Amino acid sequence: MTDNIQSLGEFSLIESIKSGFKVPEGAIGIGDDCAVLPQKTGLQTLVSTDLLVEGVHFIREDIGPYRLGWKSAAVNISDVAGMGGRPIATFLAFALPSDTPTSWVEEFVRGYRKLSERFCCPLLGGDTTLSKSGISICVTVLGECAEGRAKLRSSAKPGDLVCVTGPLGDSAAGLKLSLYGRNAEVIYADNKKVDALSCDVPASTTESLLQRHFQPVPRVHSGLILGKCDGVHAMMDISDGVGSDIRHILKASGVGAEIDVEALPLSDELKATCSAKGWDAVELALCGGEDYELLFTIDPESLAELEVKSYPIGRITTNPELKFKGSDRDYRGFTHF
Ligand code: ADP
Ligand code: MG
Image 1 (cartoon, rainbow, N blue to C red):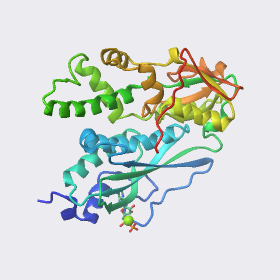
Image 2: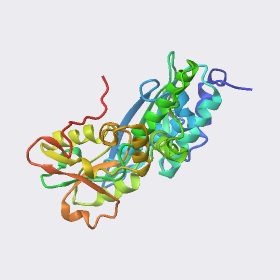
Image 3: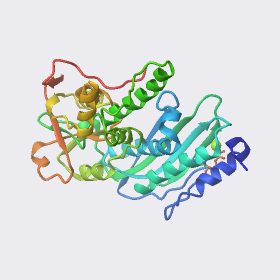
Image 4: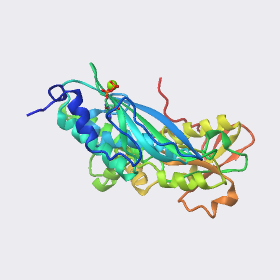
């Protein structure tokens, strides 16, 4: 029986990946030097790449292969949603240690496929190489939008409302719970009785936060609707936390904003967990990141007719500063280095 990818070999591995994905009409997918996609008049192509590195972006044992596959596709497709586009295809390059079990790759691909099918976004190519240290995953996504209609970070206007499409901070709380759980094991091993994931929060609550962290759902449908709305000016997906991401919009647009800390949408699960554990929900919502909701600015008149669930959290100002109303703190999201 073939039980790791070294015995399976590069090309059998690629074959097994290929067999699970349907190639769309008129396109050529995995198997040649390049994929071939038809050009469509009146549309523009969106392209984005993200890299996920073991130990930096994920802990292999915590996330597991299925959810890692799902998340690798999801976070990339989310970038297309952030522009108001429709995802078309992804490309998956990964570096794997030679002793990676075949079953690990199968589960990874199963999760990747599940998310891809949900958004009709097939895998059409990639690269597979040996890694001497840990797993790295690089996904490129292609998307499309009508000519000149991509929602940019640079289009926010003074007077716009700042909105998000869903609750913030769940993913960060999920990550904290997951890391906390690991520490608990270590502490237990030392025979000190600290029960980190203890019953002060119901399992269904922690499970929903863990799910939001490990299996985010990109807001593709909301993005498409927001993309068609003229009143929506600037847009992006929330990957580093609103405390960071809003700054990108402000800088690119040459404007400022006032964010109302009390208006942040917080889930019941987040509130319950934060009160049980003494965590700061606002900090998780603004600094945590990886919520993969959409952050957009909209002319206030257009908000009423918008067919997307949205939560106003502030307003764009001419004064190019970022202020947090209801708090005397500054909030910044995640940055590398
Ligand atoms: P090349 O040597 O030209 O880079 P490869 O032998 O690496 O080609 O890949 C063969 C085919 O398999 C290509 O179509 C490539 O896009 C595809 N491929 C390789 N690795 C992956 C992967 N991890 N996921 C999807 N497609 C892959
Ligand atoms: Mg290659």
